[in-house]
Image 1 (cartoon, rainbow, N blue to C red):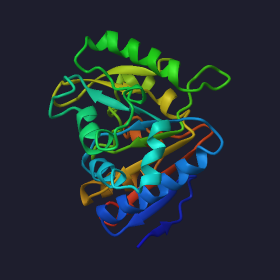
Image 2: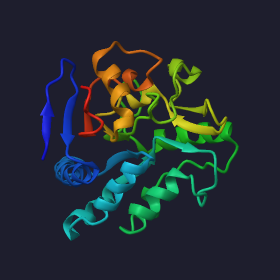
Image 3: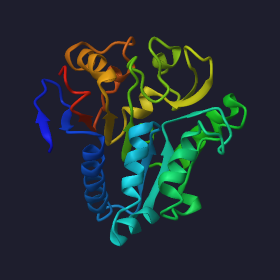
Length: 251
């Protein structure tokens, strides 16, 4: 059962019984939305997220009807962040999405725009920015505008690989940046806020009681670099939060 929570911010908040109910509703919304979008445009640009619940979502999307599965010929898939590991690595966000979704649907190779985590990070940041600019339609100020970006949120409030109080949060021009995980020191490549906030639609997918207090702070407080997810505020787009009851207990 879906419950809609009123918010004094512009976000649309949807709460579901558990992660499975959430991903079933999200998948239905996804296919309905994309079918509608493709009536007015030839292709759709989508940025995927890593994480446990997104994996459940991708598995659900892979079970779509024959008509639904057909839309993937027109969807160009990117990633909001990636660990600097080869694509076969068990921690690769690309590998997870590919095995759970893209491979099963036989998404055309030319529609899959992965981050090359195996390359020199600094060079890949530049290459991926060029890749985005080449395939994603641009706003009049020349900033690419994604049709839809999926995001998760960590218990520390990070999203993509934008970590609390990191230098990447102050980036104002680049589309992508090199990020360092604050605990492990692992290098990652991430979308920046200027790129994320240009998207037409942004969907956060957040589950579990470990996220509840962080989510409360984001919903009730002011935007802050301490909680990077609070800085996601689309300029001309919409933002929706897909939560399970455990994550939503404090809002």
